[in-house]
Amino acid sequence: MVEGETAEDHSGSSVLGVDVGGTWVRVGLVSQEGKVSESRRYIMDSHSQKSTLDSIETALAHFINFWKGPKPLALGVGLVGHTRPSAGLWVLAMNLPIQSSVPIRRLLREKTGLPVAIDNDVHAATLAELRWGMGKGLQNFVYLNIGTGLAAGMVCDGKLLRGAANYAGELGHMVVDPGGILCSCGQHGCLEPLCSGAGILAQVRSGLREYPNSSLFRAARGGTLTASQVFQAAEAGDLLAGRITGRAVQALSTALTNLVNLVNPSAIFYGGGVVGDGWLMGKVSEFVFANCLVAARHALKGIWASRFDPEQVGLVGAACLAWDYLERRRESTKMGDKN
Ligand SMILES: [Zn+2]
Image 1 (cartoon, protein in one colour):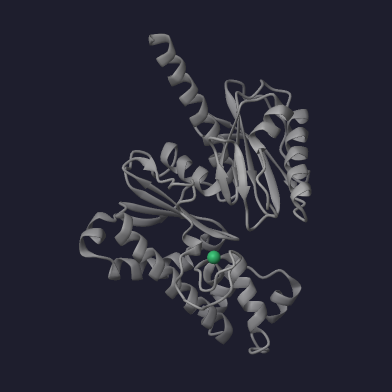
Image 2 (spheres, protein in one colour; image 1 turned 90 degrees about the vertical axis):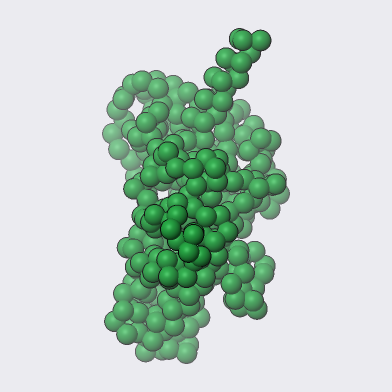
């Protein structure tokens, strides 16, 4: 445990959310209004599948042991990669070493005694946008997350678009540069290595040989470089930063324009570390509005930063899964009563 707040009983009903990321596992209590009343984050040891699962279980056990307030009603877990919520399975992840299907719902139910709902983390954040965020009341919107990786959640006709295998929204693996940079998925030319946080930093590292005088050299070698610094360096005229950001803007602009033409959203909301300073999306928005189809442009009211705290959106999304589950259970009980 590396960070926390004072345990305090906010009473009433809360659910437990678990946001499983590549570096941290964040655990917290979230109210029915989407407010985080208590949260802690724990280090993720992701060197193997076993250590990854152990990190999640240890984080949960620590939080539950620490929490002295009312018992949470349920547990929601947001996971990177491919999940099958109805079967409770974490099938595969590329940014964490999950290589064989894990019955994560059963494992965590046995550990906590709570009902457990799971889903992909970006699906979960999109559902939170729909329930509590800027997407509330909208029938068609896109939630775009660009942090270490890149993915989108699409709400079409009021519902999250899941696809045949609950794998819709993998915008990061849209091919925008055939034969381009090798991606974590094994293909060449995906969007993710061009404009995700990990992709931008990897391009800086590999570009330093060609641009040894780049202003990014020291931060890149010291391991402290952020995407935001790369954007600032590009504005200041750094050639390496300019080349990388130019490609990122072009690739993301192309992908989002295609997405807007494809799903016809009335809004795009974005979150994640790479878009936190607004630089990248400012450039991309201009291109999208200038290049999408006229009818799609008229319908698209804006491309805006999500109002969720970037540090907590994963947790709020995970908790949203638990609230959705409790609501479905209540509905099915009501239906059962009627029959
Ligand atoms: Zn890919």
